[in-house]
Image (cartoon, rainbow, N blue to C red):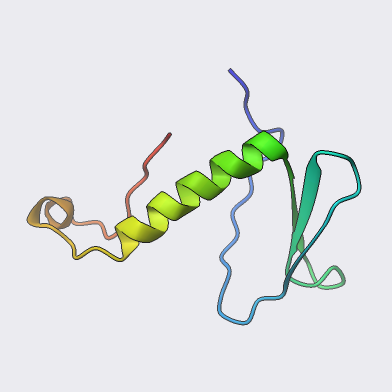
Length: 83
């Protein structure tokens, strides 16, 4: 099982600068925020980027569905959905 080498928490708000570049064949580097003021940099290989996009697409669809009684019963407005 593979684990990330660093755990990161970041909250991106509307207007947050985002950019990407490819420095190494098969890898894409995303910069969230400005490089000069505490940016978070994420680097994905092609396969992991496709996996991340699939999970992000699923999460976006789930966040746009109305809440169900079951999801409200736990008293928490957030949920973790490991894949």
